[in-house]
Every structure is written in structure tokens, then in C-alpha cells.
Length: 306
Image 1 (cartoon, rainbow, N blue to C red):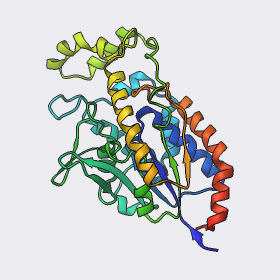
Image 2 (image 1 turned 90 degrees about the vertical axis):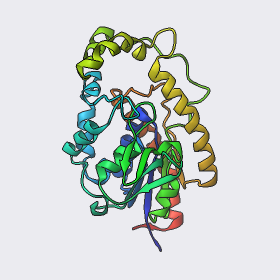
Image 3 (image 1 turned 30 degrees about the horizontal axis):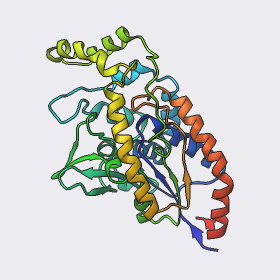
């Protein structure tokens, strides 16, 4: 029987992306090991942690992550096309072991980004891993674009939210894809009341700003973060990107279907709910376990894992 290469296509979805960890945990426990990995946005981040063997450290950190920890990684800059530069995120990932060059990784890996000038899909499969992850998660309106050579790169979710095609290009025979955008549009309600103390949160946010910016942003920070009777800034930003990605995902998956599609249900997550990792990971595990019989059936039909 032919030896199969199993591929993971890990989709975009901001804070919902921690569900990827749950999916990978279940697959690994079941003896279903990925041979190639393609990731988009948060999927690129988790995929890189997996291929570098840093998943355990990432998950341990996430179990202690709160909103203060999220704010500590925000390196604000309003002059580079986004609220956050993103360097501190990649530097922190490097401290966990998510670093190196893509060519030297133990598994073939690709991150998907978008060329800001042309709108073309860019496949990052060579060069610095941290830079590739950074470019792939550079969500417009939140993170500044990343310069790579002569290109300015944005979030890959703008063009290919679930990178099945990239996974196939890496040589995968059977592709297991994770779509984080499957139940978003048409099901979201107005955001729930704040789970955190406004004053404490605003104070931590302002501590990260240059003194020249702190006064001005101090007046608008509560409205940026508000979750009361009307959507706040991040809610509007997240909903807009969700609508766009939902439409693109439907179109891309119709033309490039994976062999197995896993759809974690996390429509109640907001774009910045990175401190809800435990819940997202559990949902990923739940959906992956439900998909195991189908995955095993597909593998048995196509051949034996490599």
C-alpha cells in the first residue's frame, strides 16, 4: 500500500485559534501524526509551535494567561499602519522555542500571508520562521504589516483562511483542515458585559504606551474595550473580518475541499479573547475526537501513513 503524507491545514480565527491545539493533541494521542503543516494567521502560529516541538510550552503558558498578560505583549505604534507592531509576540514565541529558519524545521511548513500591494496570496516556506508567523497574523486594523524584501505583508486570512491548497503544495496526500470560521456569520449576538475591571484594564493598557500617547488614548480606551449595550472597537473589527473570511472560506473550500474538515464551534468568542484558551482547546479536542472515525476511514482507504 502507498505510504501517505498526512497534512494539517490550520485556519485563521484570532483567539479561536487555540482550538488548533486541542485538535493536534487528539490527533497525536490517536497516533495520527502530521507530515506537513500549512497555517494561516493564528493557525501559522500554532502550526509553528507544533513543528518546533514547542506546543507543550505554549499550552502551559496559555493556561496561566490573563488579560494583563495579553496587554504585556502589545507593543503599540500608531505610525506603522496598525495599533500593534507584533515584535514582542514573535520574541516571546522565540523564547518558547518557536524560532529558526523554515528550511531547517523537522517537518515541511508553510505560512500564508497577503501582499498588501497586489492582494496576491504569498506562501512563506523559506527564511525566518518568526517573520513568517508575524506576517501571517498581521490582522488589518490591529497589527502593523510586515516588510519582507520588497513586499508589505498582511494577514493570510484575507485571501486563504483555511490553507488547503498550501498544504497540498507541500505534498500532502490526505489533508485534515481546521476551519474556525464555520459558525460565525448570522449567529453572533451583541457582546456580553465586561468580564474584567475597566479601570484595571485601561491602566495596564496605558502602561504600554509612550507617554506622549497615553493621555489621548486614556480618554478613548474605555470605548475601545467596551462590551455593554453596543459593540466596542474590537467587536466591530472582529465581526467585519469574520464576515469577509466566512465568504472567502466558503468559496475556497468549495473549490479546494480537504479530505477531513473539522469545525470547532466558537462563535461566542471575540477577536481578543486570547485568555480563554482552556475553553477553545477543549472545543478543539471535542470536535477532533468526533472526527477520528472519519479520519481513520480516509486513511485506510488511501493507504498507510508514511
